[in-house]
Image (cartoon, rainbow, N blue to C red; front, side, top):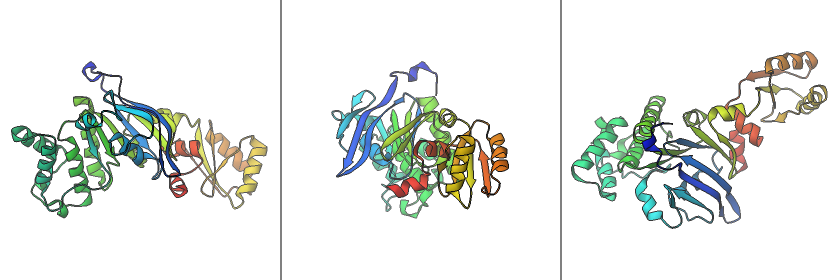
Length: 320
């Protein structure tokens, strides 16, 4: 995060306090609380159906708050939605481009919605096109663009009015690795040079690694919060994934011989150990007839999710 005091007008730009939201009988968000600091890139990481999009819609003023409270730039969402809309830039997961207009025409119409015209509008459009690699596409019809290019135009729209807070729903959707790299380079530039506070939702581990801090969502609850390094450290050691033709028996034997109880995850056993390489050797020496294969690695964000929920990402999506 930038240390320049000019970006520290308030300690937090986004505050979420015990937010809950229901769709009929389904509880989409459950007592959610966190803060996003000024000029921070904060990620909400979780599988589809975990509550990310619902929270995104609440923060972008599309849904009314049912329970709890939230504020952006110290303005309460429930009472100052109109004012908040002038301060935030939003890129939704669903497309919003007019396919029959050119890239430049789409951006012009977006600028007009915010009262931007003349030389300032031309300057803002040129800057957005340049930073998002769209200059040579400005006269192309939106419907002729690839999915990745359309995504870049969507992001450009959200930046035209120079928002203090940028909300991005799955920003890398449809982007190739090169475009994804360029996007994150630009987001870091907005953060460090202009003090923009950025909140993204994502289900991509690689994208989450770029964030200053992460909140991990599962079935509407915040199950972990911290920097990527802090979250990985919370796992508590090396991660072992053990395969066997008899998982139940192997689990019982591991518990009996080593005093640890593995998790059953995706037709394998998973456990954490501070000295995984030594434990791996002891395990194979003790139970060679039950262990068919073992993999060992340092904790990843996927491991953090498994540690907190007992499910892999794709399994969590199936539970929704």
